[in-house]
Every structure is written in structure tokens, then in C-alpha cells.
Amino acid sequence: MERTLTIFKPDSVAAGKAGQMLGQIEAAGFRVLGLKRLRLSQIQAESFYQVHRERPFFSSLVKFMTEGPVIVAALEAEQAVTRLRELMGATDPAKAATGTLRRQFASNIERNAIHGSDSAENARIEIAFFFAGSELI
Image (tube, rainbow, N blue to C red; front, side, top):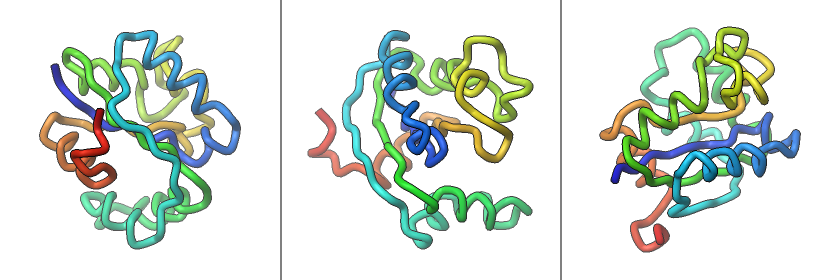
């Protein structure tokens, strides 16, 4: 079994779509180990997305991720990272496959509804960013 992290971004939470998205994730065979609703501070968002600090979209990403509540979830499944990324679809919802979460719920490449870890190593780091080990059941 492998773990991954997902974030239902402010656009999907504000639209009331996070529950539908989580339902599809669970229906795809993922088990929820931990779930939190929170609002990221600017410092938290900058820290979480620090890998993108030098990219031109960094400031707008931080602004977006701090504009409202998010829901973070630690998930577990066989090949969780790869399977969640397939279920999410391409970053640009216009290029995402039919039936993927981003195709269904995202409005554009920047407001793309959901985050998912891109590797097992990053999943460990990202899960630890939001959850203490004792919070994962």
C-alpha cells in the first residue's frame, strides 16, 4: 500500500464540490487516513509550494491557495500516487480526459480544483506537513 496527499483547493471547496470529489476518490478504492478543513496562511502556502518559488505563477498560486478554506486528505491505496494523478487528470482541465476530476470540477489551469502528490517521496513530505502521525488512522 502507498500513501498520497490531496488538497481540495479553495475553488472546489467554495463551490461545494469537495464532497463529490472525495466520493469519487473513495469509489476508486482509496482509503481516507486523515481529513482536515483549514485555511492556509501565506507562510504555510509559500512553504508548501516552495518548490515553485522561482516560477512565474508562484505569487498567484499562493494568493489562490490562501483565498479560502481547503480540505486536505491523506489517502492510501495500491499505487496511490499514480492512480490519484490519473483520476485528477491533466493540470489544464481543457486537456484533462473525460471523467477526470479536473475535467469535471476545475475552471482553468490555475484554478484546477485539486492537488495530488507527484511522487511517493513528496507524498511523505506533504502528508507530514499537514498531519501528525497520530492523526492518521
